[in-house]
Structure formats: structure tokens, C-alpha cells
Length: 170
Image (cartoon, rainbow, N blue to C red):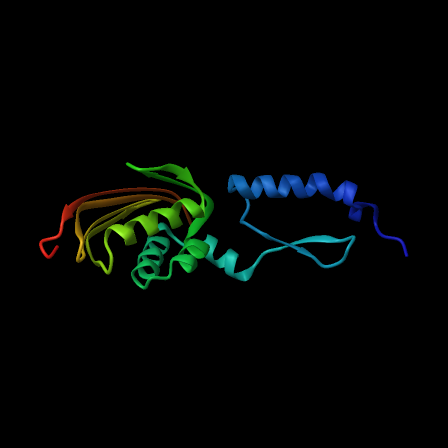
């Protein structure tokens, strides 16, 4: 059995490398790699990924808030955040989903069983702002402000700021 010359791994590697690079640059939608055969490599857009990449900043922002308020961190990360998302806070200058997991864990530790109040939401083009506060048995969070840069259906940058106050119930 012969295969077309273009299917050889040596010839496919540069093409695959360019496709991955273009995907990372955001010039083509993110794709899923699949191995349908030991020799053939194919790029198949996931219906879920394709659909998510066309969402507006408003849709991504609202989906993020809904999932977080429901405590669905992992689903939020998978649906709404770029794998290399940048997170900037007073405590961190980091990137990736683990940075967000660590930040969420820190917030849970500081505000156990917190009740969050979303005070104001603003979205303009690729940018979003959330003003919030929270109360818990241990601390209250005042002056919460998160900003987001959203592109191609994913959050690419998030900043987080809040001020901890000793809870009146503590």
C-alpha cells in the first residue's frame, strides 16, 4: 500500500507546526489534533471549540460569572479561559489554568462559605469589568474589581483586586 507523499510524517510536521503556531496566535480557531491512523494526522475542529470561539466578550463574561457562582471552576476554565491566560493580582503575576486554580483556592481559604454580590458589570468590545464584594464568617471582601481581556471566545488576561476586612461576625 502506498500513501501520498504529503502524508509522510516528515512532510506533515512543518505544516502541522505552522497550523499550531497560527492557532496559538489566534489567526485560526483552536483545533483538536486527532490521530486517525498511525500515518495520517488530521486537524478536526471540535464543534464545541468552534462554537465557543465565536462568542462575544459579553457571552464569555456572562458564562464565566454563571459557572463561577455555581462553583464549577474546572468547566469555567475549559470553556472560557485560554490555556496561557495571564493572571495579575497583588499576590501573583502568573499564567495558565493552575494560576487561576491557585487564586480560586486562596479566595476560598480567605472567604470560607462566602456570599458574593456582583455590584456592577461593564463590557466594551474585548474588555470587561466586574465590581463585587463578598462576606463570609471570617473576612469580608470590599472593593473587589476584576478586569478581563477577551479575544476569540476566551479570556486571555484577568486582573483581580479586593480588600480583606475582618468580618463583623468573626
